[in-house]
Length: 106
Image (cartoon, rainbow, N blue to C red; front, side):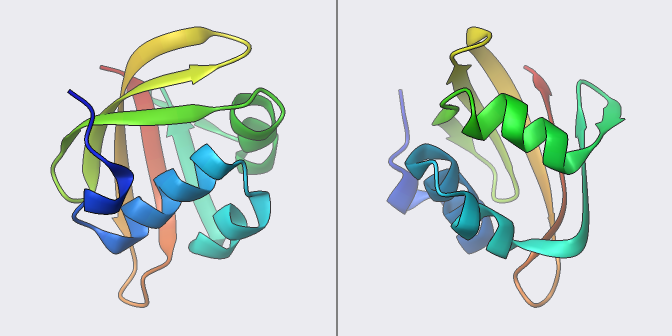
């Protein structure tokens, strides 16, 4: 069962999912701290390269299945890899910006 994005409990995570699904790079980048980092399947990746390849140039889309605040499980799909079940974990700073996110297969 998919959880509506508007019902996600953490505001930063809700904004992240909204920006990904709207393919809004500007809104996405505005959510991140200037020194934000990320990892995919346990390996740190170059953030700019990864988001371009995995989200924005390949029509990435998240359908959240479970919401634990700053951790979600979602069906993620893009034009490169198709659809897979993924886990996303977020580190959110006191000002509401995301300083790190980690994703990988669930």
